[in-house]
Image 1 (cartoon, rainbow, N blue to C red):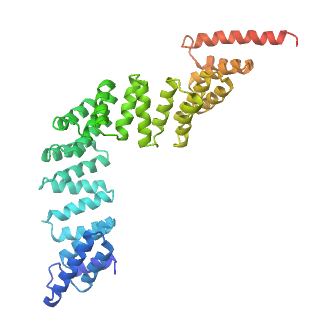
Image 2 (cartoon, helix red, strand yellow; image 1 turned 180 degrees about the vertical axis):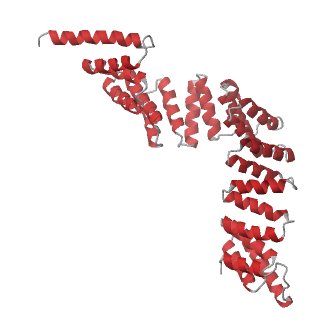
Image 3 (cartoon, one colour; image 1 turned 45 degrees about the horizontal axis):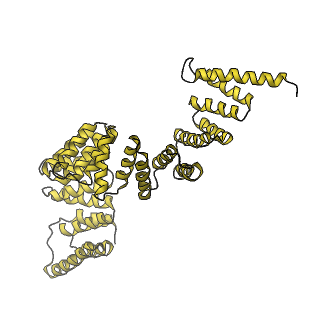
Length: 398
């Protein structure tokens, strides 16, 4: 019988230290030993059945209940495990183990406020780096970043040079755009382990976000050279090269990043842009990357408008006016506030000699743009030119 209710009935019905019959204790010990072995090799269902058979014979002591709870936890039945740990903690509140298990099960249940409660309670009497870190994680999940930092720092104080905790602290600073603080935290570990493959890329990211691309390149190049071919290293190395206009290197590293993870639309779009700047063949090298950006995501409206803009730009540069017009109109449909789309659509209409449509779009631009702004004078001149064309068409006999 695997009903937790049955277990609870037994636990509450009789005390945990109830006397056991001597003739059955050896059997209980043998079964308990076998159950522990099964649990250790992750045969938790079989272990649970054996433990439950002990319960049914009246051996419902603390060891058995604890093993039952551990089996539930190992099976991912965290709520049931949590309930049993509560019972054990109530019976033996002096044992920190049960509070730790309560915290772990609460965390796995995504009840982070409860995990915080247990974490704080445990930390009042015990300094356990992993518990301090998990308390920080729990605070982080509920958005209390300052409290998370407090517990991460306590954990780091109890166990210095812990790369996992160091990374968590640095990433909170990255999220806050406190890049110098993130770099300082990273340096505290890198001073003794300069090529750490977890923390060095975090420092590189902070430098990249700080727009110190030259320094970021040095870190990411070093990581690349020692064999750290992670997506983050290759992607940000490629992006840093792009920012420094080292386009051939950018193309190479961004493509390598794609071979690691082909799910990032920003990467596909970046490769398309770099290839465009390098004047790679549009049909065979640029546009296929733009195609991928749409294939791998459901883009938001503004992102989709930029993708269509890039398609249009490819055709525009090749003077494929009709195709450019189609894509710029799609871009405009998704982002009608972008004035450059309006003027480009008008210009494409002009190039395909659809002057009435060109005039309509140029006039739309003038209504939306501020007099004297960039492009305003050009549009005025274009309107005068087109009106002249249309006048000639109307006055010259067919």
